[in-house]
Image (tube, rainbow, N blue to C red):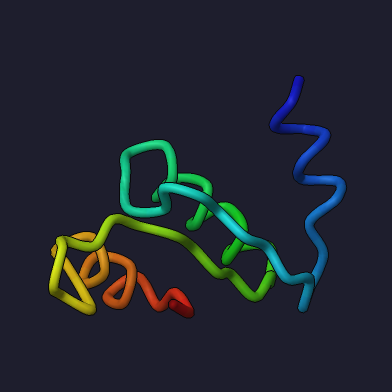
Length: 66
């Protein structure tokens, strides 16, 4: 039910922020939002002292704006 509500809200060029975008559920949400034409932004973990982590690389490869 919640997925149907979200799909009605996501439109082409809508800005969508997904917290935890590099996780299993987050990546699914990213793919759904991108498939509906949204501009997707996501958060992910960074290790102390590093600007990017493995999560950042996953999001970048998925075409996400960091």
